[in-house]
Image (cartoon, rainbow, N blue to C red; front, top):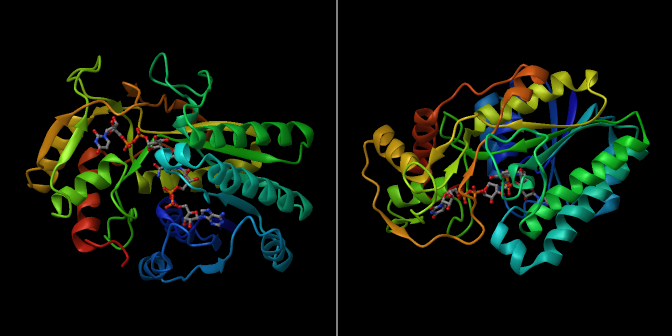
Length: 336
Ligand code: NAD
Ligand code: WQD
């Protein structure tokens, strides 16, 4: 298939480009590089032997989006592009609504105008808000706790309406749990700018000596060791999930949400200890106060992905920690 990958230079996008090329697809990346480096695509070429073409442009630029679709006929679009920092979305909601919502509307409208109706969208477990019960199945109640989460929920709503109005659409909403880890080559991985907000890049930056110690946000939650539980999924498993979605999309009309998670939850301290075990490095950490907005536990019921896509995760927490550390230690300053 010929696939347009928005946000393809980013963390999950670059890993998905590798898997797509390996599966024989042709990928074109559409990315404004606002949160990524073109070096990621050089590395994709090193891994696969194929350099994905980059259209360096903003999805808010309708003329550029139209030009991309005028130029060639795509079979499908994978839509990763967007801003994703929860705290920043609380401080600058207008930026998130503009960059994530308006740009998506432009994309979907140009897809329709050019007769491209197969779409895989990067949604998130954030659409489950603060869940009452776990594991989370796709029919769990939806809500948003912050502007970032609201953009995911509203794009999902937009896509449900769009597909209800026109039966030509085949849309898969992939709800990712916590993507972590890196390609086993150590050539591509997560490269957050500044101090990381998320747990795994914080851990690896402590391990490499860039940060002094990890603060564990709260140990008084109603969980087995008092720290929060999350479903950490290896980014290569996640990338493979997109290829499975592309393989299945032809027989999936409408708009279907599918969780991509392992189905297993790990506490913060369990992840810290797994990292220490996998890397042989002690990880300095201390207990701090809770972070506002964190839910005690979130992990997937991953059965729909297996049933509809024939996909399930292959990699466990050891591979996650090993590969995250391999990437960080080989690239202490990311792509710089
Ligand atoms: P990322 O920031 O590494 O990648 C996003 C890419 O989109 C970047 O390369 C950025 O330059 C590009 N981009 C942003 N706005 C754009 C615009 N207006 N026009 C063109 N390009 C634009 O993030 P990621 O971790 O790879 O996440 C990819 C997608 O998955 C996002 O939609 C994110 O919300 C979603 N998601 C991520 C996580 C996570 O924890 N990483 C979890 C759930 C969902
Ligand atoms: C994981 C756990 C923290 C940092 C976020 C977004 C979500 C989705 C995935 C995009 C929590 C604890 C963290 C630290 C810590 N993104 N923690 N010390 O919050 O589950 O999900 O990324 O859609 O929308 O909210 O991930 O990695 O930030 O936190 O103790 O320095 O690690 O409290 O329990 P989260 P995270």
